[in-house]
Length: 436
Ligand SMILES: [Zn+2]
Ligand SMILES: [Zn+2]
Ligand SMILES: [Zn+2]
View: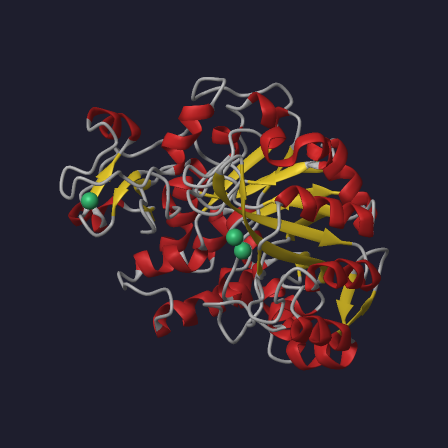
């Protein structure tokens, strides 16, 4: 069955995370978004682990469900058409590994995925000796990523370590600031146990396909959500049984069970292009090279974005597509398109929220709205502008204002509202749309 899975999220115990990141609201928002399986995130945190133990119960092999008493409470707040949707959980956590190797400081974020509370307890027991698991839902540990992988494998052969958002400059396996140039450099003889990598918001499969080393691993996408409405802004589509072990087997073999990923436009990520936020300088890689990677305003080195970094260690040209590659679907979050339609700045405005609710009450979850419902159905029910926006999104007729140095990029489906924002790229048409 088609399963949309989002493994990387954070609880309210992680820094800068919304209070609404609790198990019940993950369940509720999973239904609204149309995600089938959600990572619990933060299983290393003792209080979050306790909340998960209290509210979840085993369902299918390696999967968990919200206990009925809590589920019913949430379902009452949802329209009828979302109440029966299936939501399962997988136990996951993210670790921030900060250590030195080869004479350099390394900062990597790694996602850990586990099949049971017992395995989680084993992992937590080991990590608890190394650092403070209580201080943050995403603990910072002075632990080599390779050693973390060893701990994970020792706990269970069915657990996974997946390097997270591998291209972000500061905290990632291939990050320009404190990462490595290859999986082997980071994980040495354990490198064959790295079966998957996470694209992160700033990269897409096209960028990752350019590396020979990444042809062997499964490319997955997750939201890394810090608040419930951001769940599923990226996700991975599987065709598996409702079974943790079938999903993990799919990831390990990268076979037909992994259908593809649902992607944020990478230009919208905070580190796509190069630059300095404080200096108001944003360069594409060729411009950065012209400036010898130095900011013309302050004279300091530019923060190099993901686009530059990929190019630096890529083996293949930009348009390279491996044979048998997976499907890539680009989406723009529905509430972003609505805020463009209403010409309001915030996706949290009352108007946007009300329309969003009207849409999911009428047509079902957000992924169905973005991916399945025909434009005709929207216009037939009077949502003409939404029909137009979604058609543009699906055809890749979008306007792009790329992110840089921690500033989110802007993606628009109608050109008229973006002219003021000094576009650096022309309208992209066709090639990036749905179903590539
Ligand atoms: Zn991270
Ligand atoms: Zn994260
Ligand atoms: Zn500067």
